[in-house]
Image (cartoon, rainbow, N blue to C red):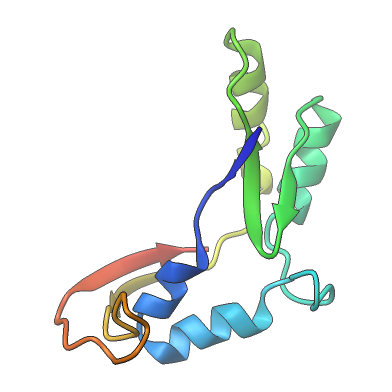
Length: 112
């Protein structure tokens, strides 16, 4: 089984400008031409025999197989990752109830 590495809830909790940018521009089932930052990493991992999948902008990793060889092979492909990194993003987006904006003064760093 695979598990998503993240979720859209994080994009909704941060400043609406950044969250909307990510949600609007990510490659999804309905936006195949969107930003696909894991494509080179996915191809490199595939050449190493590791099947990764991206669904609606989220990289899904397979359950960890036993032994160090698969993990080492995946780490050797890390140079192919492209990241959007934003530091100090205010968490003034939507509250967990999705009905109002947060009054939080907290900041987070995002890697997409």
